[in-house]
Length: 86
Image 1 (spheres, rainbow, N blue to C red):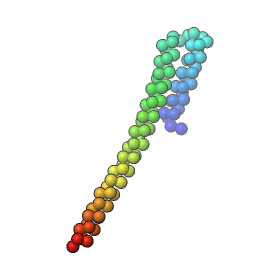
Image 2 (cartoon, one colour):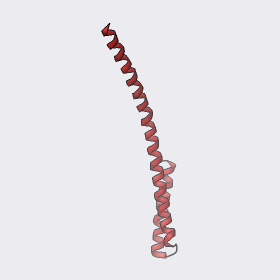
Image 3 (tube, rainbow, N blue to C red):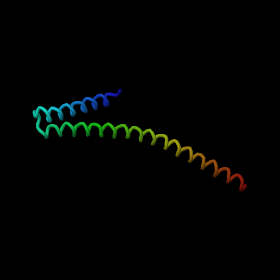
Image 4 (cartoon, rainbow, N blue to C red):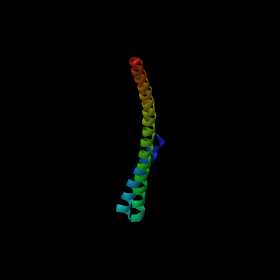
């Protein structure tokens, strides 16, 4: 389990605990309760964006390798066509 997942779970349980505390104990204000939910959601979105960026970076690297292979292949076809014309 990555550290982002652990922090996300801690924030999730913290937001549930504060929401229950607000509903039954009426101790934190409504704004404080909403703030904890918003922080949890923002952290979750940030970790998802970070993981997607890493995946796109991986695909970009492989796409560039594929592009180089097609360039080499096109050069081979051009050489082959040029040789046939002679």
